[in-house]
Image 1 (cartoon, helix red, strand yellow):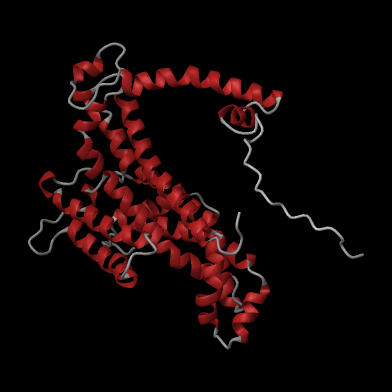
Image 2 (tube, rainbow, N blue to C red):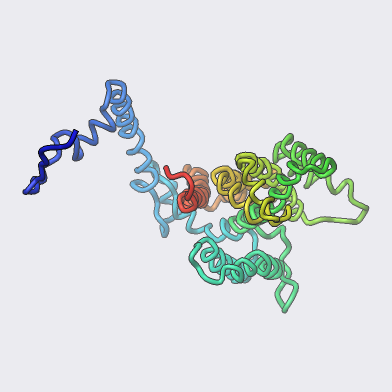
Amino acid sequence: MAMDHVFIRQEMVEARQPPRGTDGPIAWLRRSLFASPSDALLTILGLLFLLWAIPPIYNFLIGHAVMPGGTVEECRAEGAGACWAYIYARFNFFIYGFYPIDQYWRPNIVFIMGAALIIPLLIPSAPFKRINALLFFVVFPVVTFYLLNGGVFGMRHVPTEQWGGLLVTLIISLVGIICSIPIGILLALGRQSKLPIIKTLSVMFIELWRAVPLITVLFMASIMLPLFMPTGTTVDKLLRALVGVTLFSSAYLAETVRGGLQALPRGQYEAGASLGLGYWKRTYFIILPQALKHVIPGIVNNFIALFKDTSLVSIVGIFDLLNTVQSASSDINWSSPTQAVTGYVFAAAVFWIFCFAMSRYSLWMERRLDTGHKR
């Protein structure tokens, strides 16, 4: 039926205020915290817990704390909070361990070089990405080894037994993360291989390392491995720990990557094959980018777990950050009721900063690569 009358508005309707109770802080409180009786009860219990917990925590960390520049007598006073003066006095020990004081410039150069190379590498829009990656993954490890170890260009030799603190923690975590990525990807591809020998070896490797805890791996690398070596042959303790941590992390990373590979539809493999691409080109250009994008949270979880697990190397006598904090707590010059607690709070804060930074970066990268499925 044809339309006889057509209505066209001649004047625009003025904007009206949103209905009361749907906008503003009161509406947010009602919607987010007091939407139901159970929500209101949980909100009240949470507020009561915060009122109970925050004041003593604040007094310990800030209110009654002895700030840098204070004395040990102030830390020993009754009711004193965290002894940040002790952290300030032993800060170099927590960062460098037993590294010679007059050689601190060498780890400092390593820190500066590492930061200068890794920051642009993490920024997708930064130029010269290939050169940057080449410098960070190839040149930087070699320069770091000779700088820290010495023995060349007139630099004094510093054995790895004197390395320690945050320096060792970063070395173990970075080496473990960087080396476990290619090994884990190859193991994941090997586990899906159609060649029985490659598949069997990959499965055996992954299941073997996943079946034992990291502590056992470190004990095997530190104590059992020298028993199988020829007489007179010694392998550096830190190198043994690095190899054990890397292989252990590779097995877990391989399973994470395998999950990403299995998440891809079969059509992606067939599309690559229809283009005439070989196995490696198809895997490198089509399969792996999509698979890795799917499992970014899992990969970062592995990295965060690896960073925290570096503290386990203390059981084989390596002075990482946590072990230096523990050993410094026996310093009688700073003996006080809160000395050990302050040290552990400092170590926890350092671990939290690095782990939280990795978590935030992974979320940012996940959102940036989220081109196919918007949330």
